[in-house]
Length: 170
Image (cartoon, rainbow, N blue to C red; front, side, top):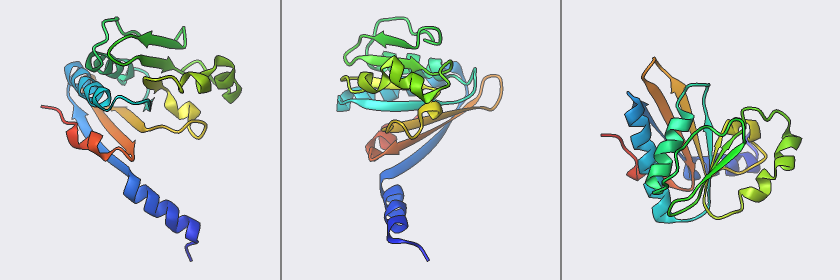
């Protein structure tokens, strides 16, 4: 028998959580979908927290480059692996975190991540699965390597279905 809490959680998940997947055939496709996503998030202009998950070389930083372009940031996007955070100034600030080297949940607190994500802007967290359950994402993006040039991008949004309606690749 399913408890009332379980029923509510199932209803919430079905009603508020939406998913969509894309096949990205090139780096240009990855940048394009990132740019479109940046434009959509800019149009809504609120604080968003986006978790990015995928193996090394899947295109996480490339996707962030596209998001940066969609926010009209002029800075060169590079992986913040060795510095933890890069901030790009566009029409809305883009906070680009990389948790690859962070292994202990206490480190998240020491780095001030919980305070940082309250700042106005788009917060994209590479290796977001390392902080799962500690932070509420508005969106989760999963990148999977299919071949040397092809990737699958799966995007899960929470109470933001309109984002998926506007997102496509040519």
